[in-house]
Image 1 (tube, one colour):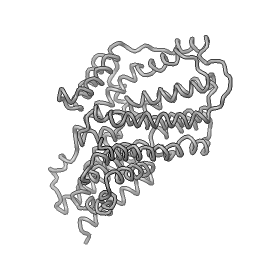
Image 2 (tube, helix red, strand yellow):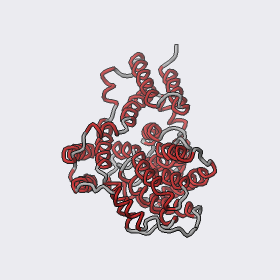
Image 3 (cartoon, one colour):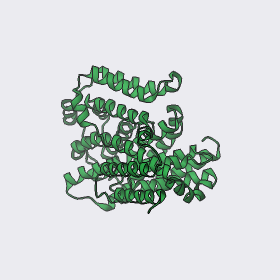
Image 4 (cartoon, helix red, strand yellow):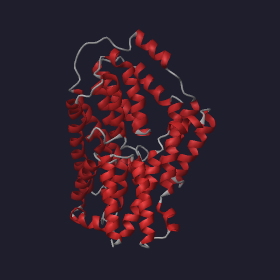
Length: 422
């Protein structure tokens, strides 16, 4: 007869193996994990069936849902495409300048929308103009995929791991931006410097000559002023959240409702376009983690990580950045975040470790062709257009710079911690 700890160790190992192997969809895996957790948790009297409902952090779930609805509506209003077209219409783009603008646009867009939406919008734009612009489509799409995960560091709303950490441990927008924005700019500048060296120098007529501008004008669809107003209002309310004391999930859901009401967009189209997977996955994983915690397995994991957690904070924060980054290369950053968060909270000074999870989790997905949704989508676009992917290019543009970005992030946290900033 297995003990509760032994049973949940088996469940834990099974879930991790299935998530890595990707034999089944990760949501399906988590549904199975939840059923096993509830059944054995109740059987071993670790918790009652009524307690299961309290395991899920509904504020986090509603915040994610509100953001998804709001930004999917804004995307359908052509707000982000309009901004992209306007930026290109104000500059004459050589291949190098076009490449830089595409990366900059990707960064800016991924700050406010999911990396899936960002790569879909900018990737589509890249495909539409790469021949006229004289740029290498492969290099551009891979670089854009990497940059979505750098842009995903900036705000609490920029990525699901950010939402989970900031909502769980109550990191305000001002505090978040103060720490995350400088390192995101450093990483962006470093990545641009490294990758621009691979862009060929050649004199090409500006793709935004008379013919290019006419094409852009025909394609341009102006969003309504309401979309601009709602977008700005959302950002301002999040920034002022600490003063007005309104929960972030209420801000997100309220502005999502306002956008649906005034935009004229059919809610059915918005709901069809939303990626519902993270919501089901996060809710399921909350239940799974609580079962692992109640069984004592989490204590065993913490005990194994004690040498790391017992180290000086600046050492453990730097090390955890690398650990979370490399784990996120093989397992999606959402489960990595949800699993490492309660472990980090056991530290005497957990705040630097929370930042390690955020930085490592966002950047780690660039280390493998399957580690991040935006990388997967970019490579799919590329394969559809060119029929194959140059693995050497992926190594040069994604893997090597990302390893260096993780090291830079570790050093950054080390400096902030030693200086007493975090």
